[in-house]
Image 1 (cartoon, rainbow, N blue to C red):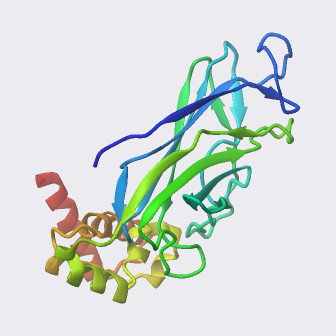
Image 2: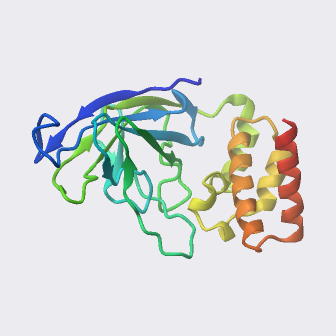
Length: 250
């Protein structure tokens, strides 16, 4: 299942037309690629996408390439194969601070990455990819403030979404009932809305289900946030220490 799919596109744009890098001083030259951590997932599992930007020029470059809800200059589009592409909804990160989106800076031949988690539909606890089938994704944006009409786009990647495994029917039912996808999304949703007790109970009952690794990762992230910000209950602090100790052993 560990299958990385990368489709790379050389982008060298100004005013929508390809130019040679040395011809125009403010010309942008980069390779853009979008990848997934696996080629197939069960309904309800998070799809983790990675955008890779590489400066293939001999000069420094900067642009708003990061994936994330605060950066409106770069977006991901998706569809079930055969349907129209639509923009991936933007999830809001749980923070009380103003977030300033700074440009990503790359030196000559430097490569940088950013990630996006695809799970909920952006307004509820409904799974965005809630039907089995083949889905396609690509990234597109206008990352350069000085040249706002220049559009960069990655190639298209494909992943398959499969029905929940029969062996995990009970685990999947509880995963849905307790809205544990909110835990998987971690700090994207306000963490006060998330029940760490339900997540811990799920892990005790179903330690090896297809969904447990995702619930555990999100739970640790939420507990860390609460502990660091002095918002954790005593039992949450104890749970966080136990999970961290288990991770070190494993």
